[in-house]
Length: 235
Image (cartoon, rainbow, N blue to C red; front, side, top):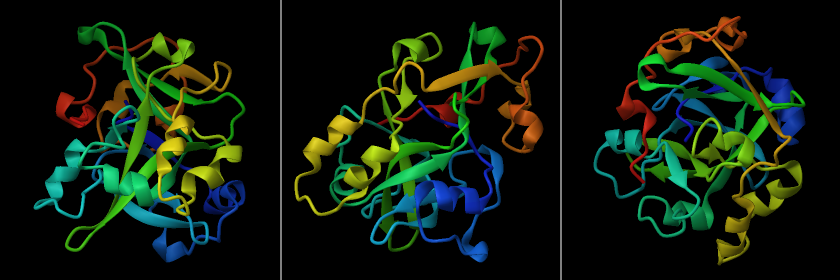
């Protein structure tokens, strides 16, 4: 599951990393150390490769209410090709979601500890995503999750699907009428890709947003994780 993440790299750094067209300052959501569902963030789309600002929580074209997106912040790799909310986007509107890291909570329910998870090499993450365009509610996206690596299984039973640069063109390509083969790209990250450390419980509140949220804490802290409705995906 991925219900909070950080995207704070300089826009030019992201443009260079993703080899995309430069970002236009007026179109870039502010950097965030605590991106939460329903907020605007950046995704990378193709044709040509470029950044777009979209709302987190995919709203399919047939949805009647914007709040539908609160239930579709994640899509399961195992069912994304078949679920009504995602199958059209999976066929034609795949994207990359830039992130510097993401958060998960571990430990007993009464003493949940937030962890910050990032690439061990310090580079940005490219999370596999889908996007959709709604006539009334605009553009939105979801992050695809998969089963965990052995390393991740000690933290959570799901993880975002992380794509390496060599897979980006294949994932973004819209040339193939049958994207079933692209589902093979949705696999757990290699065991040495990620690292984690405990961070402040301040990240639990969406209103908190600053570099202090990703600073390591000396000892685990305890506080309930974010509201369950915020964390879960029903699809």
